[in-house]
Image 1 (cartoon, rainbow, N blue to C red):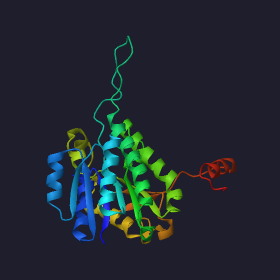
Image 2 (cartoon, helix red, strand yellow; image 1 turned 180 degrees about the vertical axis):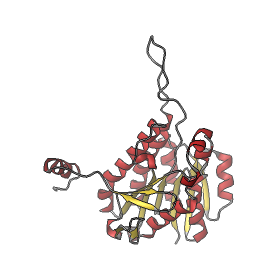
Image 3 (cartoon, helix red, strand yellow; image 1 turned 60 degrees about the vertical axis):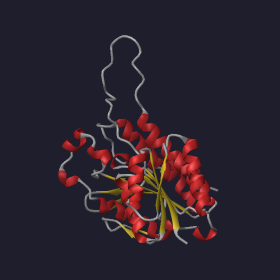
Image 4 (cartoon, rainbow, N blue to C red; image 1 turned 30 degrees about the vertical axis):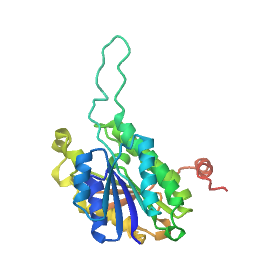
Length: 281
């Protein structure tokens, strides 16, 4: 029986490229979610074993209904790619009039990049738990974060805040869910030539071309995460199969690197963190 994948933001960019890779194997039933009906139907029609669902990830009822429909049609879920995201185009630093209360900022990027991803994570956990016992250890929840989830970015502070939050989420839930046979990880690519990137002439004009990442590098990292095997990064760091969870993988133009959590500097902090992560239980 084929494995089942659900990909948000799956009609273009990284989501579509991963869907295409899975489709070519012939061993996956691929479900791509997106908000644009025309683009989604065209994307699904170009791939085998692929179905499109028009979904706004900000709408929990819509998203949960789609998860339920996909699960009930297959009685399993093996891979959820929380990939949907939008860029930040507003000017967070804009000077407002001296008098009166400034207008409410546009935080739509938070609703898509963070709220939508947390809804996706919550639903993935539920349906993974209902999947066949034999799939434990091979269930994968992967988030698309960003290089901006690791390093600060003055250009887009709200977008970067959402991507930092995703890495915190992955590191917080990964250990607990791995105990249930669910791998949780985040990919953190730099500049990938996707519609999200190219629709902004500002961004494409400021990043040096040598920093651009080929899509095959990104999809190759996702494929390695799905393989369930040991993985070696560009620094030679090896992470074994049983430790492949709660990870942030920064993807650069030529390779990728495991990014470790910040160092703990004293005993008191270590004790505090042990409680935070239930390590004393």
